[in-house]
Image (cartoon, rainbow, N blue to C red; front, top):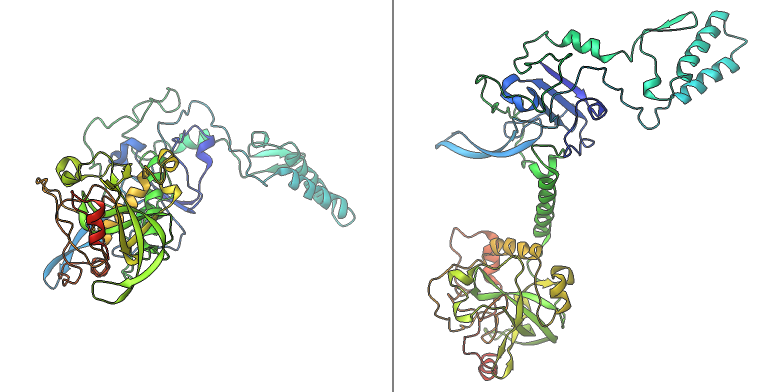
Length: 483
């Protein structure tokens, strides 16, 4: 049995106790309740699905009813079969009723919705009585007075008389009516294998009981929808699953919302900083890896200036002061112990025997500005001496590393790299995102991209990358490596 109905909120005021996570149901207007029996015994055998509007239909790859989940399915193709991604309806549906209702007494009525005050109906009846007293018959006048009396006494839901009701010499029929007799009449029109107690005499169990014998499979196949339509981009389940419930908690929805915010940020990211300024913190691309990323942290110094690049062409540069990851030996930054960046990586000034290591970096290698909101409270207090990144900002770095091919590879060797020259700057500098950056060098940016590279990775390879300093870097070596 399936019932499709408008948005329903009545259960919250009734004995059907909704779960604490049940929220967000005002976004969608159509709900479907299907009796599936033992296949969903945890929810009393009732599957609850929803969608935005009644006219919405599914496609061969997009489910009609929510909540949805992403899945991979096989379909015939010219080569035999191929795998495609589809959105399927989650078979368990919305789980909001935590335990069976107590039907030993009449359930309370739902209170009036805002603006649904019977006082207005009473006033309307009175205006008819006052304004049309000369034109109304005695019978009609008596009817309006009787109707006014019905509403005059019903200032709240529980005061509305149950139908049928007699006022004066008139009998009114319809609703509201007592719910319990209706439930008793409907209770056993269909098999109820999950009800093992007397619904109307016994106290209900604290949760829906499991079936005594194995019935249908717990997972119902989820239909994808109706007639084929043009196959556009699949909806993101994180965007369209508005309702939170026992099967999709508010905490999970909050994490999904945060992930979506990051996805939107990545989609809008221009690929590098659009306007480097002095005295700020930046993440720069490295020609060599510092642990899991080919990224470094610098403080910009002074103003942008022009000088020839490696190819002798005029380019814009900025003086950069390097940081290194705290507590990481530059010679061992790619070892298994130091490879992964923590959730909140801390940095320190990258110093040599002669002072702070500096370098001239081409402006195009500045990937991302580190703003105050990207630093922890402690890191912000020591912003230019001991910055510490937030977990959310590190997630952004992970996304950028994946998009622009800036991931490193773990190495058992602790041998440092020689700080080779890149297409942007030669030498001296990058504890940046971490140590002195020992490890494998990045391939020359002029090398042709392999066929498996993404377009983003290809574009990234063509951009300048800062070079890593050697472990024995000092101020003189730094000066020799700068332009």
